[in-house]
Image (cartoon, rainbow, N blue to C red):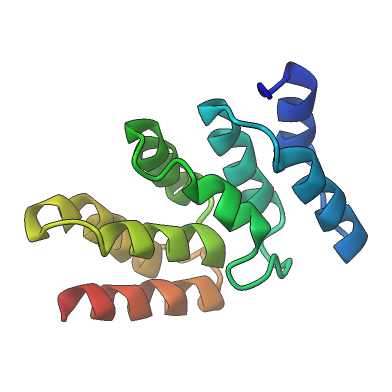
Length: 137
């Protein structure tokens, strides 16, 4: 199923306030097979930075279907630049784990910016620090 404009708008703007809302979003997205779902799903994480989506959660699984597509990497970087969250940083770290050293540079620079940005939450900065340490190993 393709991503409709209506679903994209809904995802870009939704505030998730309960597990039921999350489950409805997951049900809506699970059968969508369209690379263009990536950006709206990253917006879900950005707009709901304190919500527990699971570990890793179904939305992460849906997004990661596309990790080999170049658009995935591009949209992930944009998401972290717009609003770093535990989930998009976690996805960035997982992606960087698949890279050779030279390819990691952009991700490392982005994590360093997150750590050094004053208006970023302390929790998110801690995630970024942990991932920087992991990438340095």
